[in-house]
Image (cartoon, rainbow, N blue to C red; front, top):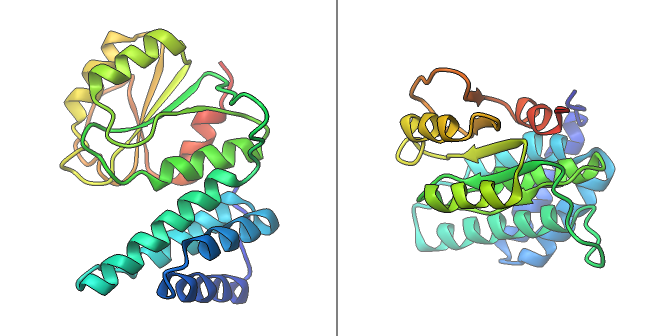
Length: 206
């Protein structure tokens, strides 16, 4: 269940993150994300602060594009630091997260990974734009129980590729996450339409 942040805390958090991004200070953005996540949890900060703030940036000028990149990079760093112990091997817990082929925008995967660590779980995060053949190779090697593929735009959310991938690995739970998956596809693949649903699917027992 997503814990709701107070409205005034949400507005203050967005204001502080926006100011840091305007100053092109990715480290300050990261520090703020880490601070907010420690107090309110990753899911609340991602859903109520980061996603709405990112949605306000349209990148119509070179300056706006620079601010958007700083904000995105700072958020990614903050999420990746949250609840991470660099001295210990990364746990996988049977979960593999990857961006769809040619998908460059995968901040949602970093939020999922951070939220899983917050729950005392782990995952194998392979990042954006992973070719389908590479994803198949990783599944053979890592043997996950759950694979979640992120797509941000319909250009990368190719349902038929996900269906084919699921058929190649019938023993693996395959999920589609992100707004890019707009085409219908049959079971056993499942489309997850909210962050809470994606987190629940990744944390589900075998």
